[in-house]
Amino acid sequence: MSEDFLKVALAAKEAAAELAPLPRAPKDAALHVIADALVAGSAEIVAANALDVEKARESGTSEYMIDRLSLDEARIEAIAEAVRQVADLPDPVGEVIRGNTLPNGLELRQLRVPLGVIGIIYEGRPNVTVDAAALCLKSGNATLLRGSSSAYESNTVLVRIMQEALAGTEVPAGAVQLVPGLTRDSVKQLMRARGLVDVLIPRGGASLINSVVEESMVPVIETGVGNCHVYVDADADLDLAIQILINAKVQRPSVCNSAETLLVHAAVADTFVPRALAALAAEGVTVHGDARVAAYGDVVPADEEDFRMEYLSLDIAAAVVDSLEDAVAHIRKYGSAHTDAIVTRSVSASRRFVALVDSAAVAVNASTRFTDGAEFGFGAEIGISTQKLHARGPMGLPELTSTKWVYTGEGHLRTSEGTVLASAGARLR
Image: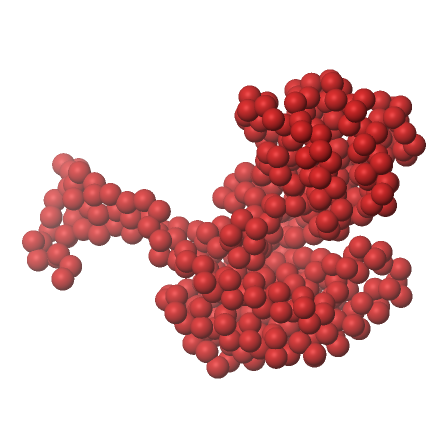
């Protein structure tokens, strides 16, 4: 482990111990200071980001990825506003999850507590640097941030501004740390920092997530890629289905909650598929269709990989299915358990789809684009978890906490005969 990494990891661990017991007020105040500092430093942030964008273009990065990388004053203001929204959210730390008085008189409570030091490995988007830091700070955690090398200039300035802002608050500046280094070795050090880092959260493409899950010695909360589906049912309002499809695919195609596959019930295919192909073509979307879709228009022939693809571009796979159950089977086979949507006027169809689709989020007559921490009212998000342990779906403040059990007695002693009270004077006062 390099001295540079050990330095920031130890600083984060020390800061986590100082941050954990802080009440809400100083954390909220610190977040507002950070938000103001980001806006005040927007010119410096934009200048650093321009260097990252220039390098990305020189290396042939797609415009969709450059869009994720790019910052301007409006985006910085939006990032700062997200920090303010996090400050306004309830503090999860200290919340009583459950509690009762046991038959022997012990008072038992399960409380939310910070996880400690959270390492975050992510790609491309420098807004994640601030979102993650804000959510971790509010939930009482220190964070070690390891963004992609493509955003290194932006991330360096963002972290420095946040640290300088924290220096004048009750929150330790060491609570926000940037992992030093641009090579994969720095990622490996973070994955091997068991005892210094309490949990890792990877946020990015499938290769990044799989690498962290398979190689990390630190516990991992797995976020997932977004192969999201829109299923148009036999009883769908077809005008609404067109609007939902276009919004889910086109509104921002480079993000994980954009639609990547369209499934159409055979009963409405003759009417809907030609309309969908025309609407998608008008938006510049390339359709990768199965043989049944190809019968309605000019599409790129789809293979198995197309239906597994997270395009993150103006591309979409499409297939005709014979039933709702076939749509669900397709989603189970090819999907990523992120977000899947049904468009239908049938209550029974919607209920069956919700019951059968095992994804982190299921949308009924709504775009997949709403699976997002801010849209769910969580403020910013740390990522969208597609696993089933601890956290699932958009990860807000509660998902960044663990719990501890606290039991309070009056001199309770456990003996072979049962519970006895050692002293009547042990009651708290």
